[in-house]
Image (cartoon, rainbow, N blue to C red; front, top):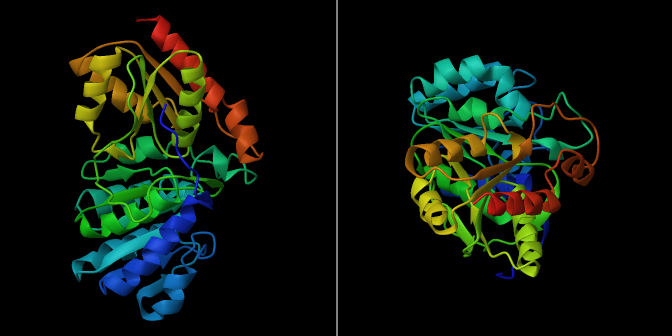
Length: 317
């Protein structure tokens, strides 16, 4: 099992903030809009450096999406910022009609996604956003795993023409991917080559998958671990190449089991190479208030749960 060095513990939302600040200096067409959460989205530096390109919309998320769509007509590249729940569920009609349908070049950037939002509780812990957004034609869906990768993804989506949903989070997590990495939309990252079981993870559960891989290695199970940072377009080639080798798959995500990464992987496998698959995800439930680690453990999203799922998939071969 390949060893990864944790450089530090950083929140992925700060990776977004740093990437946006650099984009502000590099690309004069980048503009930013926020719905009264500038500090939480780490957009302060962009606002301070470019007050003429920053728009505080207030608690009016639907209006923010409409404004952003309109700005693209003049050649601007708008980055919208608010919590994931308010970036998707609250404004789905505006995103569908004004952004996705007309393929507007809007970057919908969403923090505080999933259970690890923590103490704010179920009303803010959206667990359906990946499903909502990946169903929309023309929409790219990205869910990076750490600070460095989120920063790289933020900068990469500015160069992509079309609507993008960028999902990141609140808690400090292991920052282990390379600094100043090249982010390729739609290209999976092989974290560990193995022969016994494939673990396909996204977002905060990528590090949990690495921890699980270490535990499995001690038990004599050689896990192949893949970081799927882009949910859509899905890197089907990477998934199928691994699946044909290991003959069983586990998917791990901080999202509902219905409609998430696991569903997309299952569709890919069902069409091309059916095999045993186990799912580590929230099982048809809302969240609740608690610390991120408490919630991951309660809802079955920890490293031990990935280990159990991997053993189950391995024994089904």
